[in-house]
Image 1 (tube, rainbow, N blue to C red):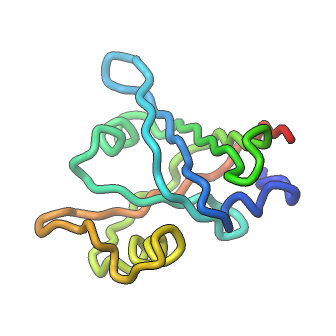
Image 2 (image 1 turned 180 degrees about the vertical axis):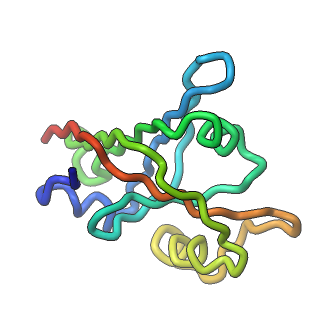
Image 3 (image 1 turned 135 degrees about the vertical axis):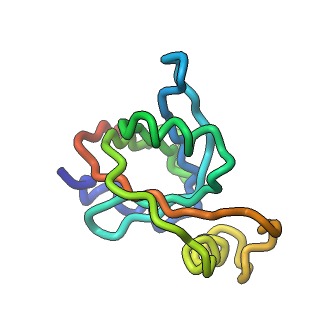
Length: 130
């Protein structure tokens, strides 16, 4: 399954993606992230200290959604499975997203001791409107 061609542009825009995971008490947890799409997989970054990191380690099922910043009635939801969590020790991934979302490089909010990772999601289904 891939992203519908008509909606790939949402990854080129400064769309904020809301990531939903399932927590340890089987309750949902949702938070916004920056994301990219490589043609097959959705990727986003975070630190190992975040609750969503622990949630994904326990349960790789995930959903992401974004509203088109140019048309609030157009959106895409992606459901899928986390296929890998890779270290972003050199900050290359977060710096690339910072260029896209903030026009800044390097990422200005990195803190010493942050253990940044890149999460890769294999889409299994999508819902779109607009």
